[in-house]
Length: 214
Image 1 (cartoon, one colour):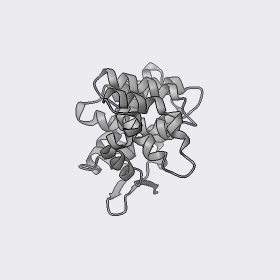
Image 2 (cartoon, helix red, strand yellow; image 1 turned 60 degrees about the vertical axis):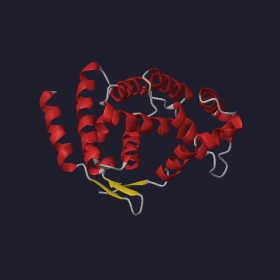
Image 3 (cartoon, helix red, strand yellow; image 1 turned 90 degrees about the horizontal axis):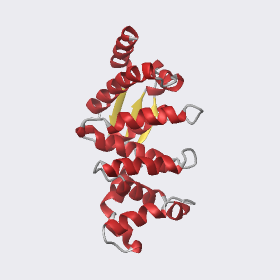
């Protein structure tokens, strides 16, 4: 495994392409064409594999941090793309979930917040795929570590609910918004005003597109 780990690590460093254009809010990436993507999809996430997969994920993260330096929203968008690969909704999902949760929560302080946002956005966006219990579990774990993702989950949900035919999200995730309002001593009907800055940031984030390139 050590030999394979090192070989794939070098392969990622050499072949993972990532170009971002802040003028067009576009990221071009060949992530979907890398063999390492298949490794995350096919892994059983047993103990022997998790260390190797963590090494490869760390290598991918370093490239994202380097290529998108100074632009947190681009970093978050790429993390979200990677996490959607790891969290395939199949019979191995519980193992995939534990692996990703451990990876994010054990990350260095300077990158943990963006990784937390990426997973929060992914879970809120794709509530039709991921059971909401996973979102609540993640939000609670973040909260215990003094990283309040409830705010960002609420802000993302509010921004998303402005889309056509998405107003149902206001009701579906109302307990998250209520929790944020209560914590901040804010009337429930003023939650949009309370999270005004976060919502503006989310709206800018949602304009970013990740495009596949060869």
